[in-house]
Length: 640
Image (cartoon, rainbow, N blue to C red):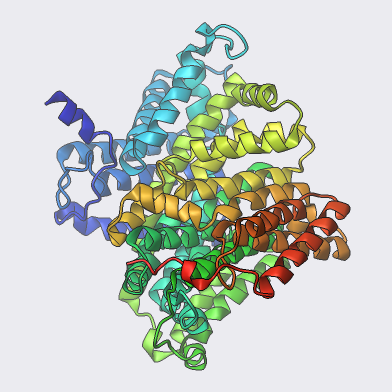
């Protein structure tokens, strides 16, 4: 009985839609919060510390109103205990807000905390941890607790990983009463960039933009071999760049594309895997990308525009890889395209207007506006486009629903960001980040390739069951110093970690995007995750390419950019051919090896090696095109 009781708390809580008076207040409160955030981030500027205090308190209250304590909690009733936790969150927030001037001007660790400071600061830590457990689950919560335990008792460790003694008041002072802890960069990013771009995405989706992207993808790719899978790749990429969440993308577009793929012959696991692979790339696809990219801008001081521009070629390579592997797999399995697809011209006539908001985003980024105003301009463009036509015109109810939905969508992200702030604050107290960098050097020495491999593995392991922003934050403070010490630029090092933090969403054994796709595909989550990795395996080497060849990040002379882009694109094509073992028919083992060696060589930052590899790839292609293949009878039969 005790084990059964404990197991209930080892999952996320049930999402509820309360029907009581609390439920009637929920949507109006969420809509008012949305309006308030828009006001203080774009119109009436308010000190950031004051904003984060109020924002976090309101969001924590929403967590306890919308998420039960366990998966078995009631979905339509808010128990008294959760009402009490919501009230406590608001009361703690009110205390911090009333004392914010004193807190901002006090000298950390010199000015003593008052008894009420200790009570409210401790309460803030507890409600943050409970909100994280309910919304994100035990994975991130356990990691946070482990770091907090290290802060308090790590002085008892012997050797390099020990640190000076940190008493509880010191610990609480840094985590709750400075901008290095809970109220640090992650929660500021959630308040500004994440919320505003989420609002843009909600407006675009609710006014028909998502349908337009899907129809456009169908018109472009639906009739070619493996049409539904290619529709999934294109539409999920387009939708993912406005949602920034692999899981949300899977649930939204996958509910349509996965059944389509299964009807045409893909297995459930493969259909789910293709959708997961396509959705995962949305987090690195400009112009919006995901919240991890906004946090990167905050952490590194690099302008978001520069990050988005640098991510263009890596994002193209990711989707080129997935699309090409889907194409080759579909040919090998004999899977055809859709019989009927919407006409491209008609699709553009009905929904081409939804390209205007994306153009507005790009223009605003290039002009140099801050991400806050870029998101605002994009949202205004969506509203203007929607209001210009009768069938998409928004009324008061639609505005109200969109505002409320945008706030409720960001609630889990806020809890995760607050928890990540606890980790960052703790690391600043103990200097653990530098110690982990020393450990990586101990393992990899000064070998950059081995260091990158260790960094990739560590980031993927951190991502087991955690949201992408939290994965990146942990990797940025633990792993990034090791990369920059070896001469990797700050932009390349952190973009490398953002890329792998995004990939962690589909990497087994705990792949959150795969778990979201599994019920839709009626397949095992592990099988879905493995299929996703299989259909994007070449994409896992792309970050190594842009670390070694900065031209891939659009840094260098025009000639360097062209040569680097061409070499890496050819490398990805060769590696995809080697991975799938098919082109015009099954490839012999020697041909696959030739393409593999050529693909690896084309990523080496040496013009001589690249030239030799290009020649090898050309010879391999010439042999294949001359028909030196196995017979088609060796092809796999279509999956059933």
